[in-house]
Length: 344
Image (tube, rainbow, N blue to C red; front, side, top):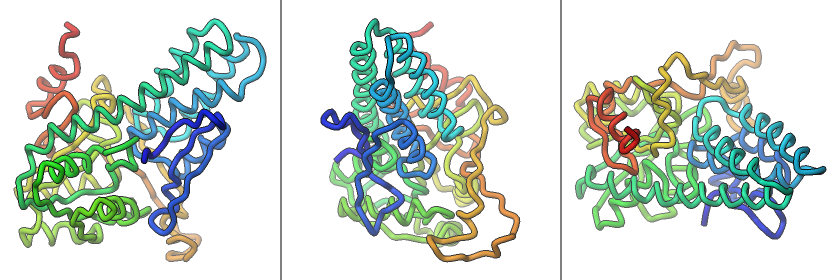
């Protein structure tokens, strides 16, 4: 099933509550923009492509909860779009989904047409996400040989998208093609998206997965247990890839051990007009480090630094896998060639 979708019957957004996994599978029904915004903030829905679709559906929600005439509804959409933008600052797809759907909705000449246009655009973005991920998988599977062991980090699977996934989508496509693949999943502290989500997804699909702690990655590489690393991304800028905190360290370890380091990412996640210093890195609650679930694991008054993402220099990335093909260095030349192909 899809990670997130629109429910016509209740005019609401249905999403898998990822904070409950793997112990419970719970669907949350978001009936208001504020409820959806909170779901984004607390990571009930997460992952760059999924956030793009969540932002798109958020605009649809706003059109249904708005009252008044056409102009009042449009003003309300603009106001609520800002609420959604302020939920998480780093993943560029969130802004892409909001802005694209808002632009379409604002063309409506009646309240009904605003709603119709918003929903049509949001559904189009969701469908595109599934198709794009499948294309990423098809392009990337040629990089995985039969018998390979792939190390992955955080969760870049169907839970991070509408369906299929980016990094895990490449693995799924390789398995679908008949290759015998093993996966090593890093737990991904502090919220354990690797152990809670990636391990759960792969086991659901019957794909061989072994879980390790993040600080075992170098040792596992040194023992020759890893053939390649495959991760997703939240934003790709001119000289760096932003992904879950810890990705940078993993890229250096892979480089030291001569292991290919691949990033599977849709072109909607590229923000190539910007550089690393232009990106706001989200800092999350200190409680994510002070508590594990309900259990206190650190002094309550300890100072905490908890950035959610880090930039990995593109010099450590062996190739970028997109729906338009595999991009190899030199990225200063090859990325624009792919992004702006046919645009002059």
